[in-house]
Image 1: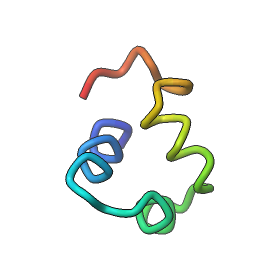
Image 2: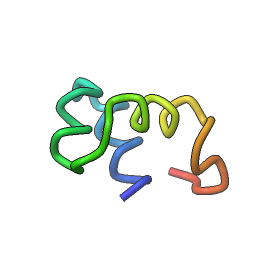
Image 3: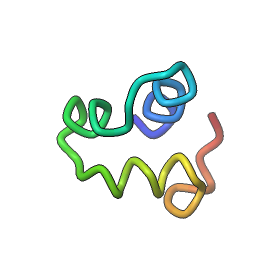
Image 4: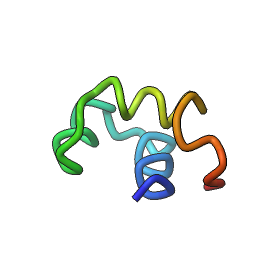
Length: 43
């Protein structure tokens, strides 16, 4: 899911929409995209 989240945001999906789709908080999406969470997962 982390790779999919990174791909979706990179392709223009708003972080808030991605968060809703995955059932997580907006801040978690931000941390994933900015490499502050799940840094070890490449995508």
